[in-house]
Image 1 (tube, helix red, strand yellow):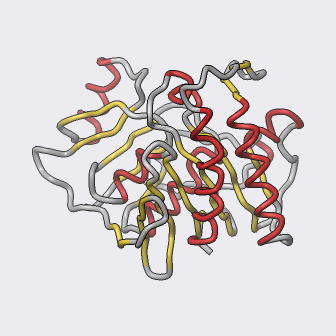
Image 2: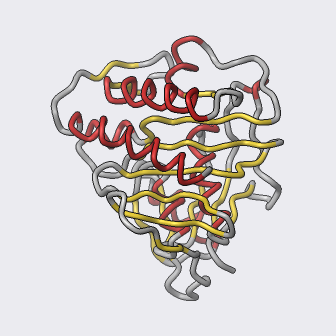
Length: 250
């Protein structure tokens, strides 16, 4: 399934990319987050493709949930879709935004794909691991790297204050940090280019599901800060996430 999800994400990426840095109109949603025509067009393509390939699996998608409200209940198996994660970066003209589809089964992400439109990179789950390809080319296996003592790199939000970053470094033991938007952070850890992503702030389930599926397929993990499993399908909470920490190898 992961490769099919990657193909759908890649198609959405081809639709979105020409709108990047094009001066398109940005509107503000009820939660004060930005939304663009790229978000809406990408979501429409993804929803149509998922309905065609997987007609029996329901979908919870960011823009649909924002406009019409998130479902009040959901079954044990469903897709989570974020057609453009990192809209703020997209609007700024930065390259760190992604297209995401994750499959949830009984509260856990079991398959997923993430595509970065500016670079053509696609990460996706596969039997026995995680794969990466660029511009639809040959896929290569990716794997988290062992924790590099003294050189551990954390990926953090652009808006993180220095004081907060220092506290997180003390808590989690990383040595360097790099600001980055969107679920690409999870994929960089999955491919062994970074080591940890602590998120002590708000996110939504569609922000993390696909990236977590890829990260765990590559040997990493995403848990609560206390090390407990990170659960999906929280319809009663509007599909909001709590704090988490994503890690590569031990």
